[in-house]
Length: 415
Image 1: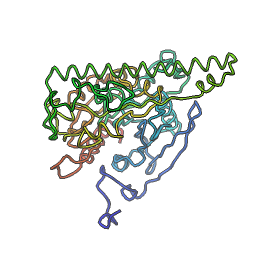
Image 2: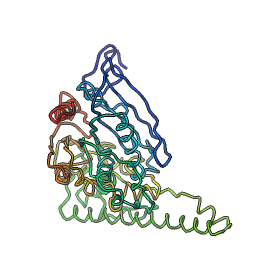
Image 3: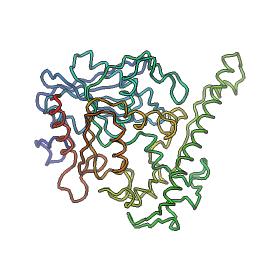
Image 4: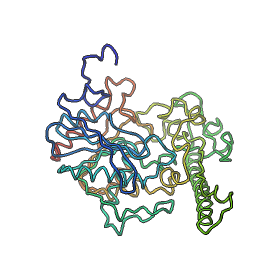
C-alpha cells in the first residue's frame, strides 16, 4: 500500500483491498467437498442479513478480491466468490469438473437459505456459469452423459439448483472458441515452435504485416484463409489428443486384463502433456480495422503480439489431452456460449468493455443474440478486458460497470 492509499478508502467498483469493504462486512472462508471428492474454496461476504447473493467464479482464477465485491455489498447483496479445483492450473482444467464445482457452491448457498442467486460470469466465468445453467435447466436424464474426452460426467446424479439471473461481464465465447480465434495457424510442425508456413504467417509483410503497432492490414482473402486454417490446426490437435488418450486407455485395458509388462504398465500410468505453441496471434489484435473498437494494439498478453506469440504466455499453452478437448478445443469443447447461452432464460445483463482485446464488438453481438432470455440487456462501458482505463479516460471502467450492474439488479428486485 502506498502512502497515499493509507487511510484512504478507494472508490467502489475499482481495485480494492480490505479497507474498501464496508466496515460491517463479515468475511467467511469455506472449503467445500464436491460430489466426486474434490475440494473447492469459496469466500462469502455478508452485511447484516442479506436475502440474495451474487456469485463470481472463474474456472482458472480465484475471484476472492474481485473488483465488484464492495459495490455489491454496498447495495445490500451477499457475495460468494468461488474457485474451481483447477485454480491456476490449465494442465488439468476440464470444464465438466468445473461445472460440478459450480454446482457445489450454488447448492451450498441454497442450503444457507438465500432467496435469489445471481451468477456473474466475468471473462472465462461466463463459460462455466452458462454451461452450468444449460445443464441445470435439463431433466437429469437429458443432461450431457459424457464429456468430449469420453468420461462419464455424472451430471444426471448432480443436484443443480436453479438460479434467478445471469450477468455477463466482458464475456468471451468460451475458452476453446477464444483460443481458436488467436491460435497461430502457420505452425507447420506441432513439435517445432519455430516452424512456419509463410503463406499463413501473420507476421509476414507479404501478408499485410507492418511492425508499427496497429498499422498492419490484412486482405479479406487472407483473413478467410487464416480463420479456416485456425480451425484446421485445432482439429489436428484434437486428433493428437484423442490418439494420446486412446493409447493410455488401451494400456489400462491391458493392465486390467492381467498384463504385467513394464512398458504397458508405464504407458497406463503416464499422463502426456501437450505443448501448444504460438497461441497469441489474433489478427484483430494486429490489424485494428478488423472489427474496430476502442482497443489498443496488442493483446492482453503484451503490446507486441509477435513477441508474446513466440514467448511463454498465452491460452492453453500446456495442457493434458483431456484438458485440451474439454476446455481449449474450439471444436470439441461443450463449454461454448453458442451451445449454452440459448438455455440462459433467466433475466440477463451483458456488460461489454469497448476496449476489450479478447472479444470484439461483432462477437459480443453474437453472444447477445445467443442468450435465450426474453428479458435481456446489453450495455457498453469504456475499459479494457479487465475494466482498466482506456488511454485518455479519467477513470477505470470498473466503476461504471459496477454502477450498471447494481442498478440493473435493483431494477429487478435483487437489491
